[in-house]
Length: 321
Image (cartoon, helix red, strand yellow):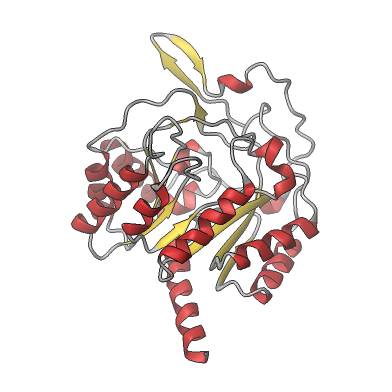
């Protein structure tokens, strides 16, 4: 585990002040072999890191401590996190810093678009922190980033991973009108875990959000992801799959939860690879166009390749109809 601190005028500021007084959660077991990854050292990783830093950008790859950062950055794949690096919520699983965010950077849309063009990305993923402090939850900023990418890199497909825009009227409609190629919103876990794992969110609001995307624009691919190993029961995961299919969600990702620090929710169980394979098989049988389920699966891992497969799966389904 890594403890990350910000330095402000020589004093150390806790990354997760809301968790500072919580008792340490037990680290119950060592990571199994199938979940371990090597530290990133490649030239491609270093080049991607330099592009990100030179454009004054934030990536969820770094902020959330993604285990796939070495692989993705080596291939010049990155998930840009807009609207700053401070989140207004304090989910028990997430390593993104919590606190009072800074004002929006008006230059960020152009900076993101320029980085996308510089890296030569054919597919880009844009996510954000929760910005409950903003009237529209940051919806207009998402729109401006999408538009800037379309202008500077018109051949790049755009996938967005959004917050839930809880109690932000018309925010969703604004983002959908910008026509991202993929609209992703993660459920993160099963409903019974929400009070302890995702207390600031509401399961059925998130489900309805995904459903509304399809109602507004059926051509946009929808996607959602969950973590396992948080104490969920298998039948709860299968019910969640049914709920997502009822909302006409196209793509499901399932990955292993990893505890960022001792102050975060503990790993209850490391799920073996064969169980992920079983979940993948079941999810396909329920009608998802795409499923990615493995210990190291994350929402934006292999997103470009998966988007190509997603389009092919829809086309095959239409031909068969």
